Length: 107
Image 1 (cartoon, rainbow, N blue to C red):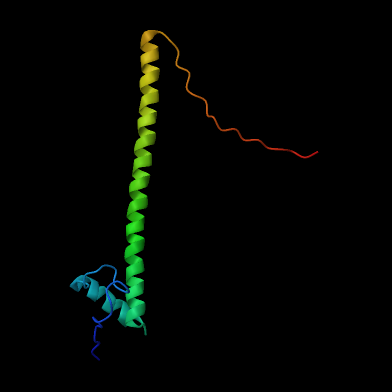
Image 2 (image 1 turned 90 degrees about the vertical axis):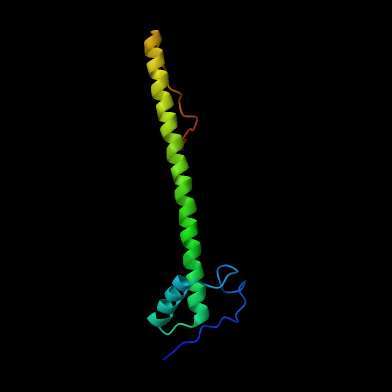
């Protein structure tokens, strides 16, 4: 059975971008369509949501990389300050956390 791809659907509504899908995207859509009795619109929306979640994961991963880089630089700075204080014959006192946890015990 041959399936006809509906290209007359407006690009802003169902496709992920303003361009028509490439051959790789069409093969993914066809495989989504053939997995079950899914309409083309459902396959397109699922495909677009998968692409959006992939982009979201990439953004989250890059943000996590910046946090790791920040924490490593702070740790290196602490080590540098300890070494400089030891070389000068002084003591280095690390900064204390400024967050307090208060627990109220009834009774």
